[in-house]
Amino acid sequence: MDSRHSGIAISVKGLKKSYGKNAALRGVDLEIRQGEIFALLGPNGAGKTTFVEILEGFRRRDGGEVSVLGIDPDHQPMALKTQIGIVLQSTGMDRYLNVAETVKMYSNYYPHPRPVDEILALVGLDAKRNERVLRLSGGQQRRLDVAIALAGNPDLLFLDEPTTGFDPSARREVWEVIKNLRALGKTVVLTTHFMDEAQYLADRLAIIANGHIVAEGNPETLAGRDRMLATVHFSLPEGVTPPPQLEVTTKVGTAFEVKTTKVTQDLYELTSWALGASVDLVDLRVDRPTLEDVYLELTAVGAVSGSKEEK
Amino acid sequence: MMNSATMLENQLKYVNKAFWRNPASAFFTFSFPLMFLVIFTSLLGHHSISPQRGITVDVSTYYVASMAAYAVITACYNNIAIGLAIQRDSGVLKRTRGTPIPSGVFILGRLIHALFVAVILVVITAAYGKFFYHASLPTGTPLVEFLIMLLVGTLTFCALGFAITCVIPNADAAPAVVNASILPLLFLSGVFIPITSTAPSWLIWIGRIFPVRHFVLGMDAGFVGTTFNWMDVLIVAAWGLGAFLLSYRFFTWEPKR
Image (cartoon, rainbow over all chains, first blue to last red; front, top):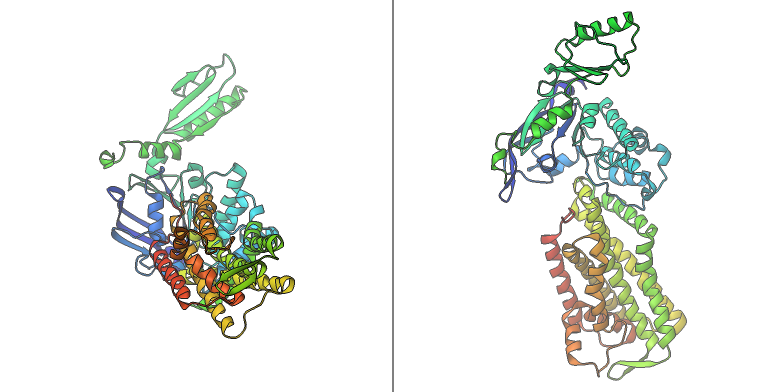
C-alpha cells in the first residue's frame, strides 16, 4: 500500500489533440500520484473532457506520451479497461434492473471483481439494493454510477463532473462517497467546474484553459493564493471606532475591512481591544482570495499564452 | 479475452430481465403481433384466398404465417433499433465501451435475445393458429426450410436494426425512424393485406427489392404450402450481410451530438 502511494499513477508529456483545425489540447504535461484525489478544473470547452477521455482510452491522441498505470491507452485499451473505473457525465443505465443486479452485471465483465455487497455498503446503497434504477433519486443514481465504476475493483477511477446539475444535498451525498474512495487507497481523477468541490475533495488540482495547464498545486496554495493579502471583515456598533493600531482599508457604514499580511497580529489587536472595550464583534471573519478568485483570474480571456490564436 | 461464454450468458440474463420489465418493449414486441393476429383472423378468418395459382387457403392460415413474420421483424428490427438508440443516447453504450466486455459479446447478447423472443412469438402464433383455426403447421422438409428462413430472417432483421441505429439521430426520433422505414414495407410486402394478382406492378416491384417480401414468402411456404424458393433466402441473407457491414463500419457507441 505505502509503496503505491509514492508511485505515479498517470504520467502525461506533451499531449496534443485537435479536432479539425481546433486545438483542444496544446501540449499538456501532468503527473498524478497514486492514492490521491486529483481535480482538473476548467471552463467548458477548455479541454477537460478531451484530456480525460484520452486517458480512459475513448479517444486517441495526436501527439505526446501518455502512461496510465504503466499502460499506453492507445496501445492496450483492453488491459487498461480491466484496471480503471469510469463515471461519465451522463448517468445512463438500464432503468428496469435493480441496484444489486446492475452492479452484479457490470462486475461480471471484470477478471477480479469486488463483492457486490461490499460495493453497495461503500456507496451507501445497501438499503436500496432491490430498488429499480428508475426509482432512484439523482444523488442515488450517481452513487450507483460510482458503484458500477468500482465493480472491477480498480486502482484508478475517473469521475467526469460528478455533481453537475445536482442540488446541494445530493452533492454532499456524492462527495462523501468520493471521500471514502481515498480511504480505500484509490487514485481518483475528477473533473469539475465547481471550486467548492475541488476544495473539499482534492489533494491536488490543476486548472486547464485553452488546452494548457495554467496552474497546478494543492487547493490551499494554488497560484500562491496563501501568500496573497488576507482581508479581515468586522462590524462595530454605531459610533464605535476600531483600535488605531489597525490600518482600516475600507469602511462602509459600520462595516470595516482590513487588508493585511499579518493576520494573526491584527486579529489579536482587534479581539483583545474588543474584549477590553466589551464590544461584540458581530460577523468577524477572515478571507483570503478564494480558489474561485484565482481560477477566474487564470482562466480569464487573454490571461493565457496562446489564447490569442483562439477565434 | 477472459471467459466470453460466461460473459455472454450473464449478458443475456440481464438483457432478458430488462426486456420483460420494460412495459413498452414487452407490449409492442410481444402483444402487438398477437393482438393483430387475433384481430385479423377474427375479422377475416373464414374467407379464403389464393396466394399462389392452384392453392387456396383460409385467410386465418395466411395470417398465422404473416403475423409470425411480423413478430420476428418487430422482435428484431424494431426492438433492437429503438432499444439501442435509447441506450446510446442515455450513455449506457458509452459506459459499456469503458468496461472490458468485448463489443462482440455485448452485440451478440442483444442478437441472441432477439432470436429467443422471435422464436417464442412464432411458437405462440403457430399454436394459436393450430388451436383456433386448424392452420396446418410445417413438418418434414418444409419445417427445415422454414427454420432456415426463420434463422436467416432473424439475423438479417437484427443486422438491419443495428444498421438503422447508425442513422437514428437520437432516442426521441427512434420510434419515428423505425416505423417510417418498416411500416410501408410491411404493407408493400403483403404482411397486413394479402397481395393479389391484381396489385399494380410497381407495388410488387418495390416489394421485391426489399427483404420483407422475401422473408414473408419464405415463412408462408411453411404454413400455406406455397413453393419454397431458395432465392428468397439468398436475398434476405444478402440484405443481412450488407446491413452487418454497414453497422460494422458506422455504428457508434457515443450519443450523437
